Length: 490
Image 1: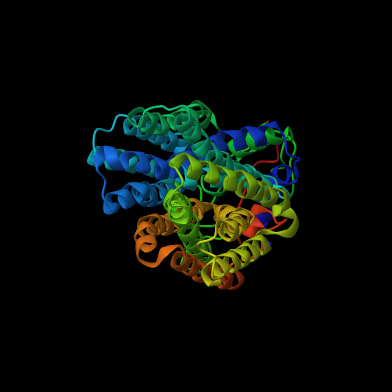
Image 2: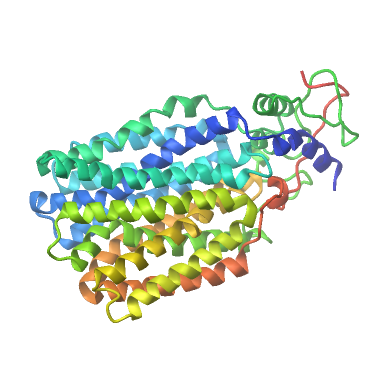
């Protein structure tokens, strides 16, 4: 271990070993409300397009585009915000993405035709993509060592509440007899409220201590932020000579002292995502997220269409309530079981076993004679798939990229991974309506089973287990050299 690595580890130690406190939960709430909104906005569109079909005279192609365009736009948002986080800092970008989302959600409520709604949904998606890239990284860089999975996972688990809120609100409007011409606008516009509630909190959050030290080399600011989170003054070494206890810290010396060298580590080597071991990790995080989202978004966004084929005589309200029941009974508990066990059994096991049960459930729907036609056979298997999607790769694919890349490229790695996931989501949401028309529910589930099998192999081959490690160790990162005079951090 280099002197710089030892000094940086001493700086981070109070953060790594701290018990979860108020500042951690403030970060989780600030990030999590964005994910509540993300889920609500991305999944409510499936019900909205059913209402809009006779109003806007939508074709199957137009329904597919409306269901999926936000997901395609989120690819651009994730890539853009991920890169900018590494160049400009986490704080400077945080809050901008949810502001974009709020504007898009409000505009969708006033759309006047298919084209205007399509454009406004792109704005929503761009903000959603930015949120995926920023929130995980910020939460991870504030988290302690033993509970990092729990904290980052709690942010993502707010998606579960968004999944429940969508069909619940739709059911209220449909059950109350609100005219379709008004109901769809209310469903879309309500997505602006929870996101707007955290814009201020996101703009006021402090820059993460990992970024201020590893990228900017700002020892003084890092020490103040660590003390703000933990209530403990961190030790600042003098060229690796050990902790100091008085005076004022200075900026770090060396290759990462400026943003111009933000992708170099403390030994002067440039960190590239295409180098070992990061390329294989990137293939693992991006590839598994891509595969997971094909199945998750393909089935979720098109669930009204799937249930309509399963129950041709059922009403939209009937199908919406069934979706709500599946999310409440299967998906929602799966999120929180994953949060509870993330730091106990590890990310890797949760991910590969989730893909395994998904593959089995989808395969049974595909292979059983009544799997795709009998409600009593299809719904239990469909619910099991949802439980293990959440207690499985839907949770871990979000957590993994925030842990396994060095600080200087963490935003970029996370952004690429999220973008890959949303590319899969776009393809799933776009193609499933057409596949349902051509190969039916059975054929779609057979495809999803094959996708899940590939996810098992990719997880086992490409991803490490970061459970219980410091963020620097999990990211295989050599921390930058930290220097300061023999004095304490004031």
